[in-house]
Length: 173
Image 1 (tube, rainbow, N blue to C red):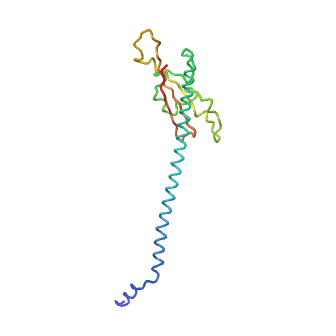
Image 2: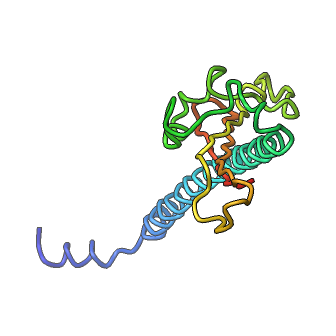
Image 3: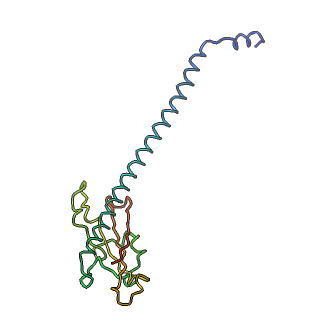
């Protein structure tokens, strides 16, 4: 091939529009796939956030229910499966293990009983109260009534295996 033939081939611009259009199409396809992937991840994040909030509010409601049960029950009548003394059966840290939340160690919250897509929410929304002993340093008056310290735990796991939330609140009374 001589030099003139090579120059003629290189100066020929026929078909360049097709190549530019193909490159542009590939570039736009990559942008579209990236946007689709981002949207899918955002949907998953939103679903996880909704589940967490649902579990959080359920656990908070269970803790409040437990607090109301604590206030409404006389100290001498506090007993049963949801009432524990700190250090006797297990420690407060055990409540952050989902295996602890069963019928032997906690009580279901009756007001949460409803069917949520085939899942009985009562079984997953529970409370427990831990008696921590007498509160220290509450009064210098020796004749004053003793102040007891409690920790009230609320648990919620609306979709079993998808994550649970434990809320604990303190109470002295």
